[in-house]
Amino acid sequence: MGFFRFRRSFKIAPGIRWNLGKRSSSISFGGKGFHYTVGGPRGSRTTVGIPGTGLSYTETSGHSSRSPDGNTGCAGCLGQIILFILIVGGISMCTRSEKDTAAAKSKASPTATPQATQSATPTPAATATPPPFPESRFWPKKVRLLKPVEFSGSVSGGTVHTTVSAGTILPANISQDHQSVEVRMNDLMATIPLAYTDFLKRAALKKSRAEN
Image (cartoon, rainbow, N blue to C red):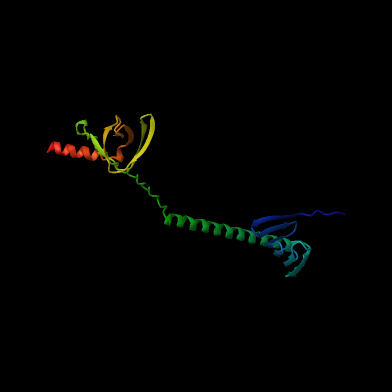
């Protein structure tokens, strides 16, 4: 003749399970490799094993015999329920205490408001304004060469190339854009940058003499 068997296991907390049977209940602590069971018809059991090998060792203590009328099983079940309630209550109290502690710490340390950092805008470097170009009445007729200048041209049907050394004074005409000077030596001409001559220096000296 067959018989009806009922067994359920509920996870209370990490590493704690409540085992509920037809006539008894128990609570197990631990995980793979080791667990300790309290309650049930066999009393307290300690099981030690090596995971993956199938080898384990179980030690039973506090063995109690079942009574015919099942009163012992009911009493054990009632005790396990009371123990379960105490464990759940303790876990909830610990969780609430941790939450209260975290809330107190968050209130005690106010969040620092980040201060806006002012980025210094770099000030553009002041550019020197060049002095105004001298008036045409102060333009010199001749200039001194500050660098050697090469002249080339056709003389008597042939091409002539010659270099005039710095310091030579030659007739000159300023260009329309005031950036270059046309200097002449006999029948030869050359266009050179204004900075290659003392044109501005001579113009300033002429202006100073006119004002005095």
